[in-house]
Length: 253
Image (cartoon, rainbow, N blue to C red; front, top):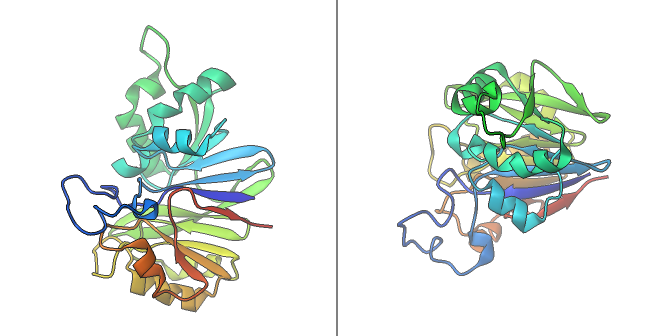
């Protein structure tokens, strides 16, 4: 299995429009972050977690040749607004793209992309999806995905455990029941927005505490704001914890 970080930035991306801070004006490639998404590849299949507004550029950068399924964490704009850019994959693959989301997220997707779900546009050229509601663990090509309920402020959203890895973006609180599903991992990916507390996101310090508690072999932080420079932040992190960056590939047995 290979995990590729398609995007590692916060909802505004980095550089942030109109900002002249040191990170937004940095020439370093790893300080440039598109909106947060993950690519999961195994057994010749490709699964995308969230379709950000940057999905088209992410797919071109990573040379993604097919999309076999899309899994959504929640329906905020920075996680779903790139869904229409999946169209070329449907045109080539011919079959509707399987789409997985919980009830709250699926209802939002239906409102945002009415034309995709209703298929009433008379001229064709529309993405077709096969929607599936997430109400517990589910299998995609002999690989189980375990939904991980967390809180994004007061909003219930999902992370996912896939094999011996877990992806938990956009959270401020992880319930005890979910923490039990995050133990003994090879790779743990966590939201770590910045140092300053935020009402709906984890901080570097909070996520480091979770790493210490859960003891994964490796941890990567994502959904990173422009307050954190890549190299300067990594220099202060433990050896088994790194800031992720756009295009980072992580291989798992």
